[in-house]
Amino acid sequence: MKFLIDKYCSNEWKEFINFHKETRQYEKGSYVFEAGEETQGLFIIESGKVKISYKQYDNSSRLIRLANDGDILGHRGFGGNWKYPISAFTLEKTKVSFISVEVFDVVAKANALFSYHLMMFFAEELRKSEAKIKHYPVKNLVARALLDNARAFGFESDKSAKLAHTLTRKDLASKAGTTYETVVRSLAEFNKTGVIKIDGKEIHILDMERLRKLARPEESQK
Amino acid sequence: MKFLIDKYCSNEWKEFINFHKETRQYEKGSYVFEAGEETQGLFIIESGKVKISYKQYDNSSRLIRLANDGDILGHRGFGGNWKYPISAFTLEKTKVSFISVEVFDVVAKANALFSYHLMMFFAEELRKSEAKIKHYPVKNLVARALLDNARAFGFESDKSAKLAHTLTRKDLASKAGTTYETVVRSLAEFNKTGVIKIDGKEIHILDMERLRKLARPEESQK
DNA sequence: ATCGAAATCTGATTTGTATCATATGTATTG
DNA sequence: CAATACATATGATACAAATCAGATTTCGAT
Image (cartoon, rainbow over all chains, first blue to last red; front, top):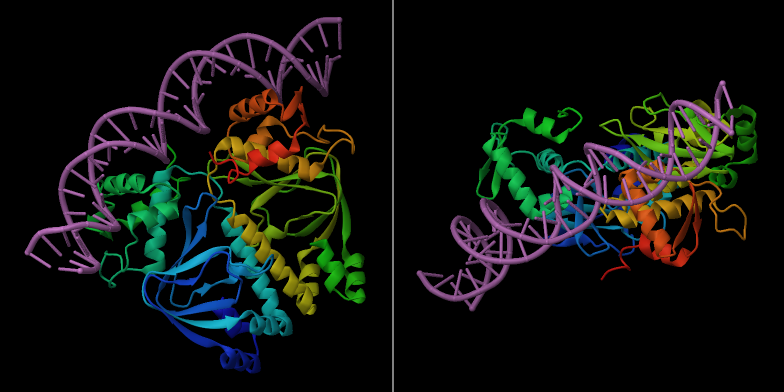
């Protein structure tokens, strides 16, 4: 989403944004914002790792997204009653640029092309979100959670198969919408079949191809 | 979404839209568009009833929305690869106004405020969509499907408790994300407890209050 | 009216996953 | 470096819902 500003706003407006944005720091394990809070604005991650989760009716929480450098937080608080529907929680020390709703509003209303592409961005997010409705077998969902973990945070080094930041089993469960026991069992199986290697709490992804297949049940039809 | 055009486009642009829109008719039981087709544009329902469903990996389909007079179809095809991710199928003879992507595009890019509010509209849809992630007990989901049925299509008359158009058990199942056997069983229970009355294939909603409670598990916590 | 197909209903069985129980390993803190 | 809190692991059990199987009703077509 940041690229939309770069691409579709004039230089004057970019300066306007730069002038009004402010930098904030968060320690590991703190909230950037919490579900229910009034929407203050957008956060662009300069550096760090954040998990975004949804508080459910029974107070359990569901992890819906992982974000790191360059990603945007808070846009889901736009519209409606202008409250964040989700919480953003830092997994590491994190630095963000903050753009207030007011600033954003002025920019969006003044830049038709920007608004237009922003609209397309949300339309696309909506499509993606809708694609998640189906209840897949949990094993597939766990595989997908692992993949998302890898995609969002990458590996320790280019050559390494070890995740740069391994989510806890609990977080993986929250992402997959299941219990941590089930995650542990699924991981144990992936481990046994050589798809991953469990190394204490850390996880190495040995066979990305097979993991991808596990995450896409269309292809794993018997 | 139609109201956004009315509200945020100038009169000249409204005329532009009216000039370029075209009217189409569909018989009961036909597709307005099918998942995978290239996005042609938007459809505004003038009269009729439509179900919108998502084709799943296993070729089963999941009903995500019901639409009738005044509702908009096809906006989910915007962005990304410009294909409709979903299918729209008429439950009755239906008349629509069609606005092509090209026309829409010109209008959106020329009307900053329109784009802006459209963006907000999508942002809101995204929020709503995300709220659906949780796996509720199916009985709750069936109740919700019934409610949606009532909300979308209303009752036969103001005084009547009989739904103007009762979805088939299969469609209710598709909406609730379960099997039709389970829907039948849930309905049988609602029938026995006096929440609804089953009248052949038709359904009467006798106790709206209790049905609402059944649909909101937050409140039915034991 | 009669036929046949499709939709609805009900019961029996299976299955995947949550839940419960408990153990081991691994960080954190005084 | 204990002490203890927390994450991970694994087995046993319970349960909700899918699947399978078959009966009955509804409704359009002839």
